[in-house]
Image (cartoon, rainbow, N blue to C red; front, side):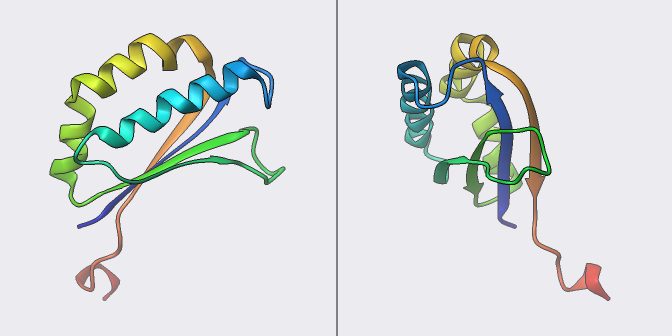
Length: 103
């Protein structure tokens, strides 16, 4: 079962600032974690929610997603950068409907 992990968030940095660029450079290093696939950092365009940015990545299974959460590189990123630079966020973890659940 494929897992789509999406995080919507705001940074304390100004848009297009050097600090913003450095943050996303650090984000990109999360793609070195073997379980992470299709890592993208995006600007959120809708005016229907308060978030300016999004991260999106996929995992082949719930097990791989849980491995990512425990990975020392993920934990280090959260402790050293995310907590210091992100002002608010919302996580969304999605899985496809199975045929059985649609019946």
